[in-house]
Length: 108
Length: 121
Image 1 (cartoon, one colour):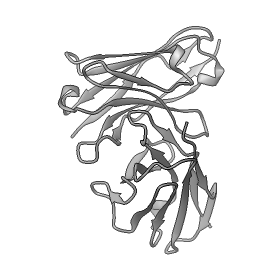
Image 2 (image 1 turned 120 degrees about the vertical axis):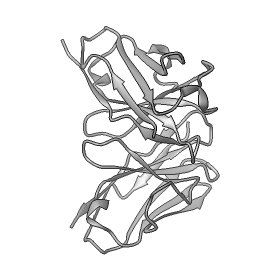
Image 3 (image 1 turned 180 degrees about the vertical axis):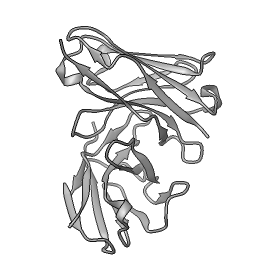
């Protein structure tokens, strides 16, 4: 089973700052990694798929990078609505899936 | 646009079977060649994939839950359903159904709003 480890668990930042979130896989997942955003009381929303592609309607301030075992989600300048929990997900053995444990981006 | 809605009892007794249905509107389950899914989230915790199903009936299970999970699809009703047997308090969670994305398949998007299922006597 592929394990995804996200870091940090919590990121405390101010609006306008840059956020850098990490997701590390226990073995290579190639580029088969996505990022989701979840706000309180809401379902997750797809942000980035296949490591670096923005999903439909996602603002350009969100970007993804990486391949193999190390991936990064970057939010270039935090907007108030970006404070949420972010999950990575892998599909290298699709249609089986694994999620990371999440990173909470909170207002400093 | 595609919408998903979970339905089912919000309270299930320990050792009984949890049953949920996901109703799809704004599109057809049969129109996607990818897999639909169930995912759950215990209160205050992360996401756990449970099972995926293709409209043909092909299925893939999370190995940790496989022995207790049954999934089915009814294309005539545009629904797919989840059963989880022998539930315990550890199965208390928000249960989400999710669609393969129309532009980013096979990734899940959109998801249903989720339904909280509490296991308690």
